[in-house]
Amino acid sequence: MIRDQYPRLHAPATSVAARTYELSELLVDVLGVTDVGAEFPETVTYHPTCHGLRMLRLGDRPLTLLRQVRGIQLVELGDAEECCGFGGTFALKNPDVSTAMLTDKCARVRDTGARVLAAADNSCLAHIGGGLNPRTIRAKRARVVDEVPDWEALRDTGSAIKADVQRRLPELLEQFEASVTAAGATVHWARDAAEACRIVVELTRATGADEVVKVKSMATQEIELNEALEAAGIAAYETDLAELIVQLGEDTPSHILVPAIHYNRAQIREIFERRMADAPPDLSDEPAALAEAARAHLRRRFLSARVAVSGANFAVADTGTLVVVESEGNGRMCLTLPETLISVVGVEKLLPTFTDLEVFLQLLPRSSTGERMNPYTSMWTGVTPGDGPQDVHVVLVDNGRSAVLADPVGRPALSCIRCSACLNVCPVYERAGGHAYGSVYPGPIGAILSPQLTGVADNASLPYASTLCGACYDVCPVKINIPEILVHLRQQAPHPPAERATMRLLSWVMRSPRRWTAALRLARAGAGPLGAYRQRRSGARTLRRLPWPASAWTRSRDLPLPAPQTFREWWGKQ
Ligand code: SF4
Image (cartoon, rainbow, N blue to C red; front, side):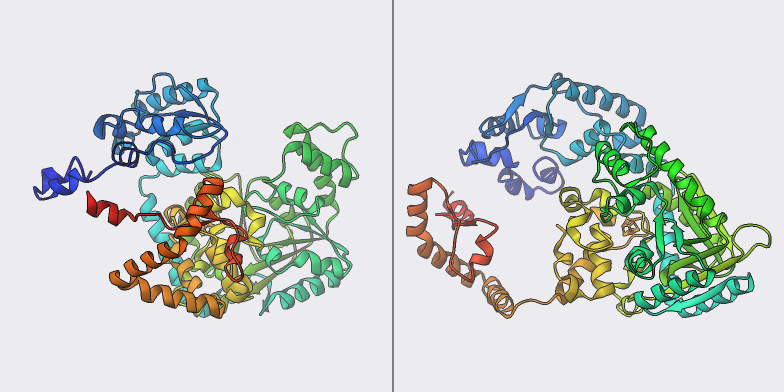
């Protein structure tokens, strides 16, 4: 853009355009660098993008750099110079042609057998990535979202409804209590996790049951209900397939939507064989066989259970209706077969009117499973005589939500509908997995919700578990500005006095170009002999070990030494 378009729009921009380089050009042509010291022991193929090839005329400069990477095995891509079919709005305006071109490109990439595709343009990589992995939830979500012409308007509406709920929460809660009580249910209020668990335990004991079946629920995980029930001598059985796997494996979920995503099918078979007494002796690791074993196991539980515990995706204030959205039908079994149903619902799950569901029942399935509509949507309003549970309870849980509500910047985190779209696009979650967050809510939403629910000091590292790339904000169906809240929480996180003093000093230095230049010179003078020594010994320009307190940094990272010449100095001489 700067090089080709700016001079046409504004003549003085010509001199800027003449000094603007694409990275591989700058390295190869201007700096004369072809070996950047990288190592990547993988099979890689390279797609020269149209923008790089025809507009920037990069030629084989990126390949020149790739060839110098140690350990790399470069495989030539067939018909490499053919377009992948992206082309910005072209893909939207001519979807059929774009898809046909993408199909060809993906076939060529697969033909190479390479594990990694490299390109110098992120948009082409995202486009080809979607074509190569069409069955990922992320790709399915993108496809079904693209089908909805008013998706952005739906997001705005969903966000506005949730903001309205947060503004009128006390009033709507009272309205919900009145509606659902009039429909025959009993409402209980729980200030915190302990109170919510105590209520569920007492309600279960009152029925005389010593076991409950459970519908997948983040709220019950948050309050650690299973542990509380177990301590009271009541067995809790998870009935969602993935939750069942996690429970039998004595593990914790690693994803909001697909809690057992970290297991492969051989591991699942091993867990079933070890922990499921009624698993068939010749159980294979075929998905259908595993699902059938779980189905038979759960069917017996459903038929004998007298008490079920659920959460709710939505609670409608004007009708007193609770809604559970799911894919397997286990929820429907729990919500209809037992005599007693106890639903643990976070107070933020309210919607003002039944009509509001039409927005969220479009937003949620497309954002979570990439489906136009989820297979099972169960709704119940109190007690229906002679049909389903006749003893219905709703436990409305605060557990830190009032504190979140009081913070105008952090408050939108309460709009979350737990779709998990933000997890599926997060580059940090993708690499680290859900367990690394150490909180019930993993991924970007966990990084803003957990610190607010239980205190930033208790989760001080979570707001930093993000690159602030903004991908989560782009996909969030209710437009929660997660990066903004992350930055807000970082400001509240406790920092050691030495870190605070260092940051204050750095800020003072960086505020003045004169002080910054002087500091760089000083650092270079100090590091000069050290750098020369390291370079002689190992060819490296990094330090591996520093004395305390800087050892906290070098324990997990190298410290690069200042370059002999800064970019500005080099530029000034040109
Ligand atoms: S923050 Fe948004 S994208 Fe993430 S789980 Fe919640 S609703 Fe979904």
